[in-house]
Image 1 (cartoon, rainbow, N blue to C red):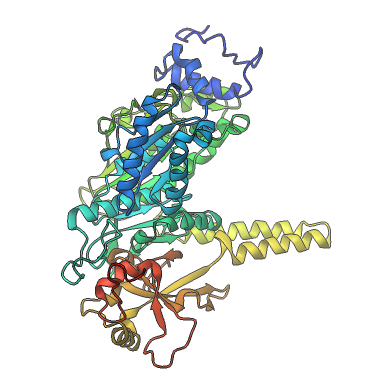
Image 2: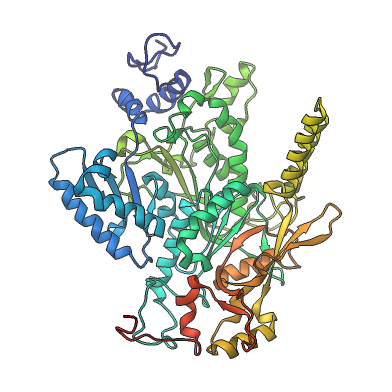
Length: 627
């Protein structure tokens, strides 16, 4: 045993000999023994408990959408079944609220699947979970995955950005948090024009004409972006608050108004791509695939995403960097690099805000490369190994890495997670600027740098072209060319853009809608848009590909509308690639009726939001009228 090295438990064999459970990985254990046990984060007597926890399935956890019409009903159900579970003889059965989430709006359901499906006592609970998940009232989500949005501290009117949004659970949580904060501060809205006594189905705001804020949900992959939109579709009443985009997060474009002023975000979530070894409990295949190499490969991309976020964050705003990885290379090493590159940031300690058992961030760690562990960059260089300096522990002290938040699986019966919370305490200065008492930051600047996203696109297309040229047979070449064309015309390599036209710029359409529906004078025409799809050809020409939602009018909150106008307007240097946004409010009727002044009819999902503005075409049914 080397001097200072703790004795490893008998179940650990760094050379891979002896018998071991199937869900184990020698390299994984060697790496995390060095970085969790030897650093004191996990006691050596806890090591086997830690590993055993990683081989167990996760409990079911969920949160309730606070602005949903069925929220109170579902919470009452959960409280009822909490009592039922407490009365059960089976000790495996437990239904408990998440202690750190206010007002019993988050729950943990520890009931074996067989019992939940077959026991008559829990049949209604099982059916309720299925029904209200489909309605968007219940959101099934791993408990630790709820934490980044919880510490993001979203307040009323905030402009929020989720840079790596798919599959969409955290985006939904951000939307619900924003909508709930707006409702608590300003109420339902439109009280002066809404008919008193009318039945109210939504528990949130129905007035989006003020400063309600927005959430921009970004995802680079077109396929995953589609999954993201589908996930949020369960929360249709919140759709006016959200804009979906598809960009490489490292090169997300700056948004500027026509007068040149930049639109910055109050809250940014960087839940970055990672090796995901904190999710071993729900993804056991990762045991076979785990390698320290992936952390080293991801480090630079993770840092680039975080630094891009710093530029997009307003002074006084909050940014959360999070991963579902346990590796310090993806966690504390990235945080240290962020703090070095962006002195305008302060690392916040939010551990006391949560009632979960948490662990502090690491200040020292080892980096693995081809089975060897290195304590410092100098040690790696001495051994002839080339690794980035930034993946090693920082030489300087005082960065405050212990303020980071780690969740270890065996402490709370959860997955593993890492969170760092930053506040922007000073404005940054673009590279090359000479301003006294200000700091510069590294990272991509879309106002000054070349279009990094287009450079990456051309590299990928070139690889596909080379693959087609290397094809040995005509059949293989045809397949390779087809893959290239699919990538070029669809997916993340496509250059299809969207343009939005405001209803306020269509006076004839406005007059027709006002005449037919008797719209109130306060009807916010500036928040309704039609959408047209365009494709940017190789020669730079914009060609309209299809009408898309041009036959619809979409309702957006004022802040979301500003994002669209700034990102897709003619003045934008780099256009925002918007894949969806806004709630369908009006749509073209399939039937032509001569005496109607407009061909647009109300869309069902927007009826409650639009009803207060309607003076005509409204039928009120008395009790019993439908019998």
